Image 1 (cartoon, helix red, strand yellow):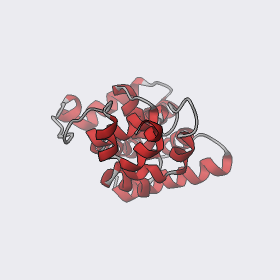
Image 2 (cartoon, rainbow, N blue to C red; image 1 turned 135 degrees about the vertical axis):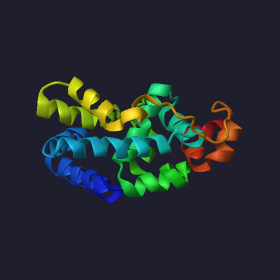
Image 3 (cartoon, helix red, strand yellow; image 1 turned 90 degrees about the vertical axis):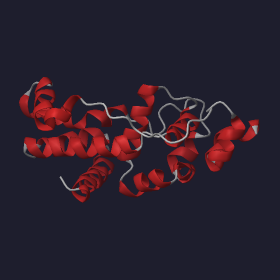
Length: 190
């Protein structure tokens, strides 16, 4: 699946989800379930590539500020949430995670005590497997097809360059690296 096709799917699902008042992940599952299984696997491949590309310390720091903390699992959900925002926001975040300070959900989330739901979208991680389950009635068929599709790469764990590590609990360092997000979420402490 070409990257433009992937983003077209996301944006079509966003529009349908907004019109119908349904969760984006459910709309994506429904749309993918109407496609051949090969395309669902290709969607999963693109999703993983985009998801992996955000596996960086600066993006994790943004998630940490926005969520009031961020575990390994939560960071997976955050990266899925960034993908769910669509191509334009994804590209902005990939270049400058601090740009999320301009996203309306982030701005609004800065004013609520429980920010754990702002951009953290766990269900977006499981759209491809959900589509397979809808087609076949069995969740395990996706993972079997995925292993076959990925071949020798299916279980490989590549070393990723996450950039420079830094202390997320150091307010000055966070302010230096992510000034707009730090102003939103740490303002009174700086």
